[in-house]
Length: 374
Image (cartoon, rainbow, N blue to C red; front, top):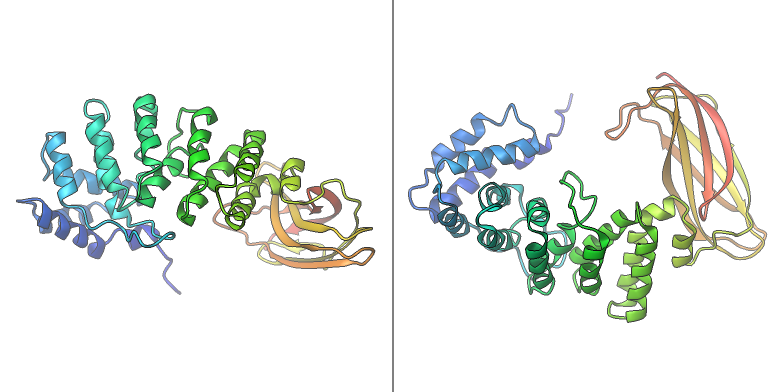
């Protein structure tokens, strides 16, 4: 049986910790690399991914100055070269370089915020400081936002990305920021025209976060950016699709219009299941025919309503197809959806289930089936 992949072991192991220890020993006089590796590895087995990062910072602290200003100088002296400035995407950096951010929050947040923010500025050019800027936003909002405004024009695109990513309202794994869209959207207004996809993807993910609680703010921002014309049409089209992906799944009419889809089109639809019942760990196979009176661009999604542990049903939307119908002719789609019993994001339970076909946000057909034990 193949050994299960472990992200925490892939990121934090003897090789990666040894690399960091060597860099610290080269940049910090008296730093004992062998001791650091031994200390880190001794505590990994009992810790998960994020806890390992904190543990590595604990172990580093034992060999760093207790004075934060000196500690910050030591950490900067041990940093590797900045990430390749000639790239424009997919260069996140390595998790081992999170330690300056952890220690900046621990020891600089209250009494040395300016020096701590300088440290985050240097560190984010090696590994994103999106988790560690957030405590400063919450504790010192005016001073930190003033920094972020300046950083939004920085020559390094990792610094510019931090402005958007660090202020995202629903950043995965991160603590919430206690600022509103009246503060963050003006930052995005500046960043939306960035020439690097790494930044514009973050801006779009930020808008997608906002869309979950304020769709109008997102649609207004996209319309404003389109009128301004500061971003290329191709990139802004991509950003618009990426920003509205949650609203499109939800069938939001304004999002549909923004992407050129009618949410009120006339649709005739037939939906067929290949089998009923279906077993957990089996597959739901279905096909559909969609007909519209005129030629229409369509976004076809499907919604699975499945029984949860408590017996209630919960919907989950899945993408199916994007295309264009022909007037009066059947537009055909089909799908095999594997019903894995123990997926990483949710668990399946036996019970009644329902499949709904969604076209441009409209529910146009549905079929019920029973989900049986594997």
